[in-house]
Image (cartoon, rainbow, N blue to C red; front, side, top):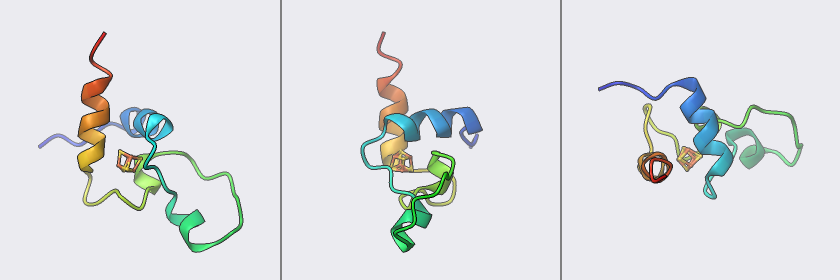
Length: 61
Ligand code: SF4
């Protein structure tokens, strides 16, 4: 199973409505975390159901 690239994770997180930073979930402090699925509470073991959907959606040109 190939894992998503860093660029894919950043792109999907930027368009994903479900994105929720692990850090902002734990604190009110708004910091400049990189917006990436890697930093999302929904990201587990290198994958996310929504990720696959979002990525597939971007293929529709
Ligand atoms: S991990 Fe899932 S829910 Fe979080 S930003 Fe990525 S696709 Fe969206």
